[in-house]
Image (cartoon, rainbow, N blue to C red; front, side, top):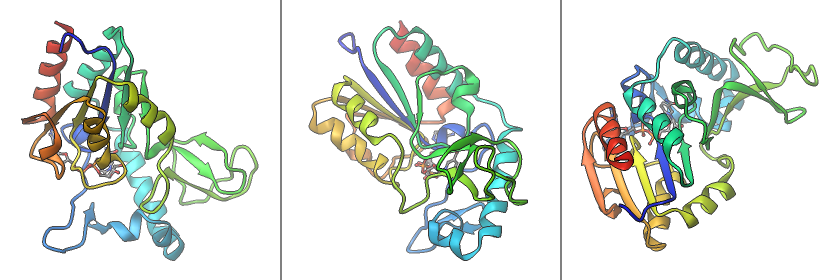
Length: 236
Ligand code: NAD
């Protein structure tokens, strides 16, 4: 551990679970994957949006409103402290679309699956801040077209800033995965990239993820306990 200088941390829905934000339920025994009682195909795919835009806009409007009532938990604060005090390179790659890392004070954060608090205009391709709802089809603040959509990467779409993520993975000495099921690619493949490059890997999760066997070390428990403990070790 003393040789570690550059760190990449991947976070998933599990780090925000103790803040009261629902994780995503992967379908067991071939059953549908559910997110707040909705089938993922209905609310998190371009096809679902084309089929029923009202349903999708309402779903994200509810989640956008909900995250604004939630607070970061000790796991978010611990990562923010690590970010502030770690002298080497550090990148928090989050699959989460909430803003709890930033509200805890973290700066080096990359949202690979987009953000609830921005909207993306499919006419002018510009992303703008958004705290209100999209269901009334507000005009884009840049081009005025009423074609704003949630700035969330849906299944079948390309996650953001993959070149930056792979560049950070190539030069890191430690890859840490926190609160992610290892079911959603390409993020689920990062541990394999890291192992192939000879990077140390650590998993912090409530239960073993799908790729758990690939990590050099796995610690099981709630993020609010495991993450502050690990950060303390790193800063000791
Ligand atoms: P996931 O919901 O598939 O898996 C969550 C993981 O977190 C599970 O492995 C679970 O064991 C673990 N977990 C649950 N509670 C925990 C706790 N208290 N401490 C530690 N671990 C805990 O999440 P995912 O792998 O991030 O993939 C789901 C997709 O859905 C992502 O693409 C993400 O963008 C999206 N999503 C985002 C949010 C959010 O922004 N907060 C919430 C739900 C889903």
